[in-house]
Image 1 (cartoon, one colour):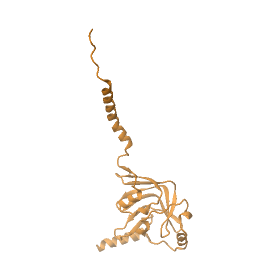
Image 2 (cartoon, one colour):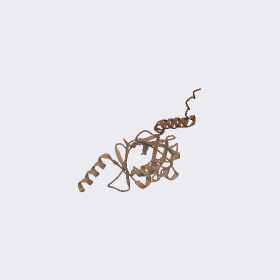
Image 3 (tube, one colour):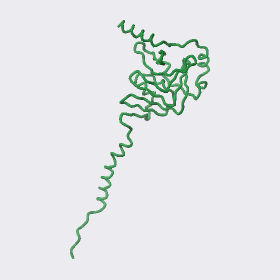
Image 4 (spheres, one colour):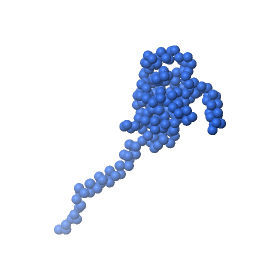
Length: 205
């Protein structure tokens, strides 16, 4: 009687099939887990406040309580997400309002095209459109609030402020007293005044 040909051992064959299957699936798993190209996300130990510092801005421009953020490295678009809209006050008594999402185009020493951030000036809420570090005046931050620029000390924004659900809760007693009694707006100048100073500075050079 003729002998049947000997079949290979099924265990090594199964092992080889499993290895090839895992190798085929691995790229697909990696691509699903990876973020979109050019977009970085908050990770352990990497806060948005440190990101601002890395770009030459003070870390306290945004409050505590930012839950997550994304930065599109190809366009510079930064989006910070808070759990809810809130109010924060700075050491000089200035009151700021933050929406659920605050976004802007982040570059070295600047956050332009800002949305979701407003400042109270003489009982009127004005949207902040840009935040710049002043090269001519070290230690000064320039806020673009539409028709005017507002110059403030950089030291006011080094530490992230607490953000509260209401304007009254966002102010300390000292800041509230200073806010009620202040006359005029410190550091506020019209755009044409800022432009004139800039032209004069260039002529001196």
